[in-house]
Image (cartoon, rainbow, N blue to C red; front, side, top):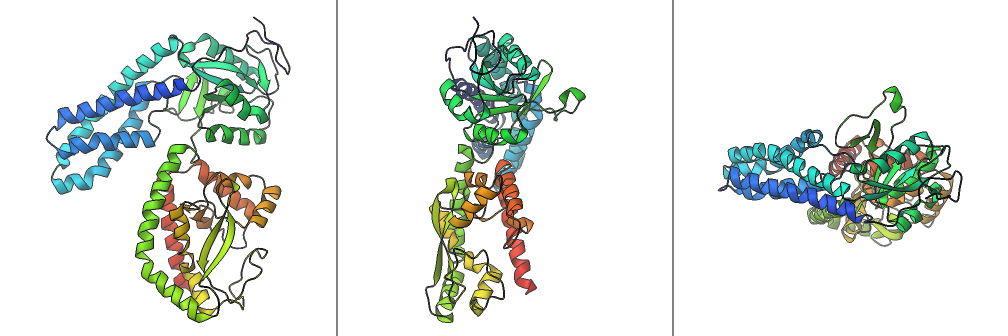
Length: 459
């Protein structure tokens, strides 16, 4: 049957009726997770059935696999390609339990269960991938859109239709057609969000057609934010410029596809980040309570006025919230219109200068973190008027609002504080969001503390 798309060249196949949609991805992930869980439990029970490590290791290892994307379903999964990655996650799990194992005298048993777990997990992947391929041949497929209607996009569409073992049911193309296509062109990049909902899309394949790369940035961010699996054909792959092989790279009959790393905007990342924020901010509020009490008293007696200075800022999804700091100035009626306050501003009190230099004035913001208005680490929030202006003037600035605002951030530890480049801040903030990990937050917090100490000792 021939389908004629709304734009461009006629195609040779009608849009298929909705099949399983995104449920296929969920089933496949559940399959892999189930086999891994059985392997973890069996390894621990067989290796050291009388050890506390046998009880704790499977739980910790399963959590590590889940939080690091270990159940992601590739197009052409191979157990041996996953083996080095699995070894690393088993090692991380053992390191997490090592202090407790040493204290309980179970270090040797922990090492044994870790060693036994590695081949067990690889065997579990062999079995789960075999079942997954059988499911795909039986018609359990993920619906996909191909962005880029050029030669490579056309080849991928034909390959996905011919080889169902890749688990892809291609629905159509996004972009301007440049050749005969096996599927209809459904729209342009600006319509991606609606098309994903309309056709139950689970995967996006970027094959690069006539679209400009700048037009694809927001498309990719939309796809990743919606928790879709996104694959990109590397530029110049035909000239041997290829990404490193591994679980994040698939190969479709000679065409490499690199999976785009999920950013911090995915749901599981927010859960992890929020848990860290609650635990750390709660502890910091308790530990800094005497210091905060002393600072509040000093502010109260330094000059007339309230102890706290409150100001509206823009947070996640452009929502305003109120941030509080210890007041450091005698008066500041232009705080919503003045970009920054100089160190020699005559309105600063002596106490205020000390609080700013040591960042003690920021302590009340821990309550904003605990409430969920902010995070410990993230793009620094801006006042509404400035945020609106920068969003209109600076490319990518609005994308910062995908993420909760932070007490400190990637831009700040790179020296971008006060009167510094806003475009550079936006670039670093967006890079942080795309590459977020718990470890990166820890690094930023350590570097922030080091910078605060250096600043306090310098003056």
